[in-house]
Image (cartoon, rainbow, N blue to C red; front, top):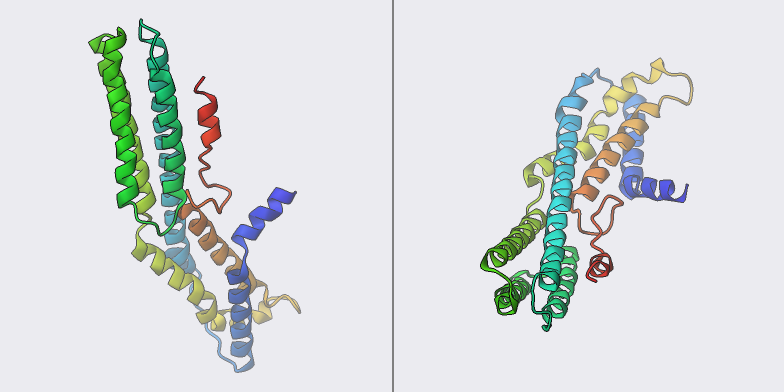
Length: 257
C-alpha cells in the first residue's frame, strides 16, 4: 500500500492540481459568460495522447536498452576477472586482485557518471578510459603466466565489449527523446484543458448537478499524469522514479570472489 501511494505521488503532483484548478476555473467562466463550443473529441487523441504515448514508448525502450548495456558491461567485467583468476597455469600472480580492484573502481565511477547532473564528462571520461587501459595491460600480462594467445584474444574481446557497452550507456545518458516532440507535447498538455473551457461549458447540461466539472478534472489529471510518467522515464539514471536503473556496486563486487 505504501509503495502504491509513492507511485501516485510521482505521477500526480503540484502541476496536476494547478492545471486542474485552471481548467475548472476556465470552464466556470466560459459557462458563466455563455462561451460554449463543440470542439471535436478526436483532437485530444491526435494532437496530445498519440505524441505523449509515443514519447513514453521511446523513453521506455531507451531504459530497456540501458539495462541491456549495463548487463553487458557488468557481465564482461566479471568474465575478465574469472579469466585472470582461473586461466593462468602459474597461480603465483596478483592479477585477480588487481582486476577486482579495477572492476570495483569502474563500477563506482560508472554510477557516479550516470547519476551526476550538470557535471562535465570530458575529464572524468578520460580517467575512466585510463582504467580500461590498465585492464588491457592486465590481459596482456596474462601471457607471462601461461595463458595462450587465443585465450588472451578472447579476453580482449570481453574488454572491447565492455568499452562498447560503456559508450552505449553514455549515449543513452546524453541523448534523449526528441526535444521538439517533448516541447510540443508539453505545450498542448498544459494549454488544452484551458482552451477547451468552452467545450466543457457546453457539456454542463449533460451531467447531473455537481458533476459538471468531472470532465475538466479528468482531462487535466490524465494528461498531466501521462506527462509526468514520460518525465520520469526520460532519464533512467536520475534515481527519482520507481522505474529508474539502480546501479548497485556492492552487488557486482559480491560476485568477484
